[in-house]
Length: 191
Image (cartoon, rainbow, N blue to C red; front, side, top):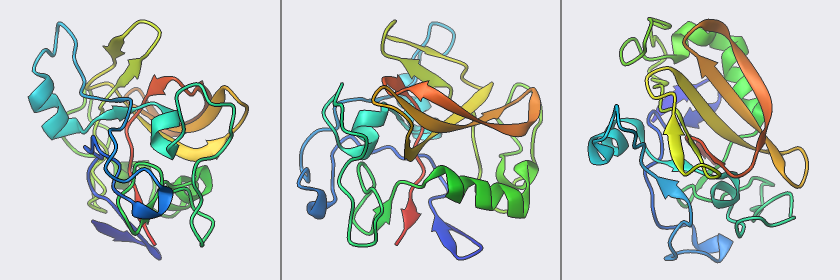
């Protein structure tokens, strides 16, 4: 974990394949989309999962059935979406990502190694790694070592949610309305 401002964040991407928070009603069940990165160029999916974590679609991230028209998963007593996060943790909103980026800057959050081109100094210990993404429509992974995408708990429409995108070729963060079926990384925040 890493402490930034008043938040305690995970310092690595989530690797869970089983829901564990008992309050969400899904504890002990398999997470439907929790894939390791696999591509012909990077075929070692076990090593990829160990290094970069797993890639989750938004529905799995918030604990909803794939294709659900609901715009939020289980919300705890504090109003946070717990989803794939372990008990006592929650999926951050876009505002929480914006807060740490505004306070520390992109370079301070990004790992020094593992990128196609240097992007950061990781002075916070947050260690963003370029885990790429999974496209459920093509059943393929893309952009390992080039980009990092993180789901937020923020739903925009019944088919799109907001992600936080770190791009090796751009020192600025992008927030995109993205198809909820895409597989992105997850970082959780402690209650």
